[in-house]
Length: 316
Image 1 (cartoon, rainbow, N blue to C red):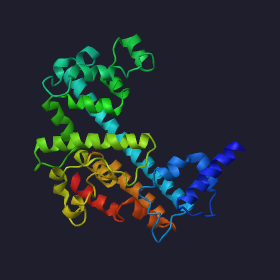
Image 2 (image 1 turned 120 degrees about the vertical axis):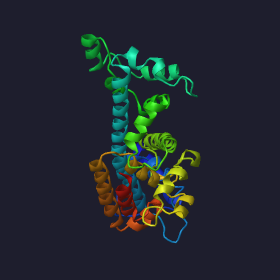
Image 3 (image 1 turned 90 degrees about the horizontal axis):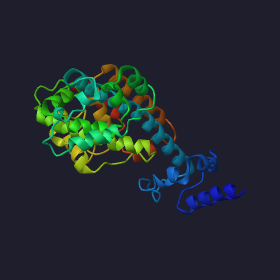
Image 4 (image 1 turned 120 degrees about the horizontal axis):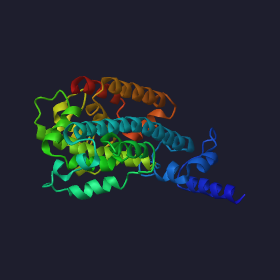
């Protein structure tokens, strides 16, 4: 009974903040399963509760569910990018450095004159390896080594990002040109700057999703956002205008992450699949009674799928 009263009090607290009740849903049950923090606190800054169109409990459930579904979709493609990045590093390590740890993790293979400490970066990655787990344990027992593909598979994205940063210029170029294709007019330095920035952009939103924080209408700091020097090459009326970018669209928001997924996914099959699945998701929510109100709050353009389709045609 105390537990029931706990959630009843939270529900009453919501109503005192201007949220109205909608009898179509059992919001008390939603509070018990998702929590006050996830259903209300995460969104209160973006909900215009004092507007002429009041926000009710069904709206809260709707925006939470949309956010969750969108996160699930995006996370799948961020994981695929991580897999591709690890595989590119694996290729470089295997073909240029060697298959044994003392070969592919040798300091001389990396840029020791850069601003990142090579030894610390490598040691931090090694700390993440569980040598007593399969299949690493199997390789150690039978082949007396941990090949690059296993080493990379068992370290988090943040450590992979740091390993990329300590690569020498030639190896960095190999990675960047694998992901950013069909851009012969762009200098390698510009592509490297964009890629460096994209890794931080992706890492930030990946962590937002992993910790179940609000995803829609969430902004990364502008100094870590997408750079105009690169995205200006895509400026057009059908993809993204300079005015839209200057007013934050795709600069440091979720829409910018959508752009990165298209730009940095070499596989046409995966790019097409992402656009298709995003289109299905957005159509599903736009067609609901609460759709337009909540989608407006999300700051995702109604024509985002058309924009991404145009970008897809230009990028690769």
